[in-house]
Length: 226
Image 1 (spheres, rainbow, N blue to C red):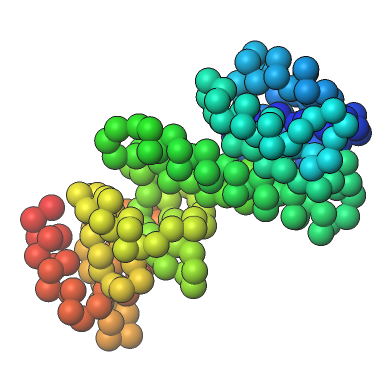
Image 2 (cartoon, one colour; image 1 turned 90 degrees about the horizontal axis):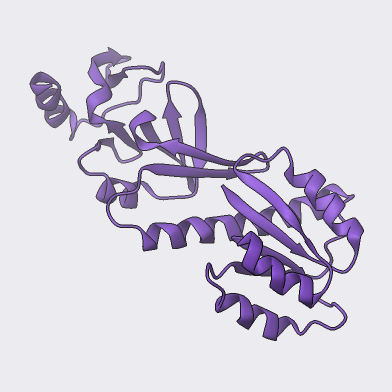
């Protein structure tokens, strides 16, 4: 869960952003500070992960406040926006959500760096919020242009990572079957030929990704050992 604090002297900003965030997964609006005094108090009592701050506010020095946030116990990420109380147009909402998702990615990256051991989830960021995908639920990772599509038995997601990094990080969980696909080792069930090509049968999903000719002998040997 990521906690969002709004710093804006216009109360309408908080109302509109709360309305925008209320249906977004894994994100919670924890309140609005309309003055520096309120903001400092809420930093201590609410411990936000992200502070969305209006660029120009009376009686608040943005640089000093950002520096104060960096020294706070949980050191929230500060995102300064020109205007927070205008989210009526689709373009304005999209820009705000994109900015917020960038902040959320930074929060999870920070948590990951602070933790020890292998991470247990992948994260998908969208206008519906944040989906935390347990690694043990992932059956297939497939490159899709600049992104990676994540297949589970329940749903599919899109994440902004690379197969190369995922393969390196989870080498004991996934195996490469093609330049564009990694499969969960424990979910491999067999190989089926489709139109002369070897394709992987994966437990829990209907997708049958192609196996490259170079890697087919390795995959067959692995399946025989499972």
